[in-house]
Amino acid sequence: YGGAYLAGDAKGNVTIAEKVAKEIDADVFLPDYRLLPETAYDDVLWDVVLAYIYLVQIRGIDPANILLLGISSGGGLATRLLQSLAEVQRNNGEMHDASIHTLIEQATKRFSSSSSSSSLL
Image (spheres, rainbow, N blue to C red):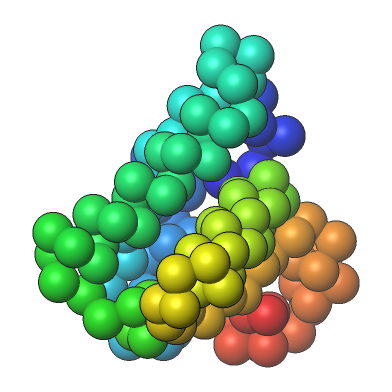
């Protein structure tokens, strides 16, 4: 969620998540993650990594079917998660497929007058 890692929560993003889910005909999962400055950035990233691990190992979701979507700082976390997965792949020869789309405030404003499907990056 947006908020520069300082504010926001999953609950505040349910409306946009429901819109995206309807648009792409998919289920959504909104993880909560801790905020700065109460925790370190690495702990925030760890929360997102644990959410991914939960989806793959506990829920049994194929990583190729996971679409990471983030708004503002959430987009940064999605990108960092993919970097972490690439590091695991490089270091261990494992394969982790995931798609990523990030929505940032500037792009949302740019496409706000377009149809709803074209506002998804």
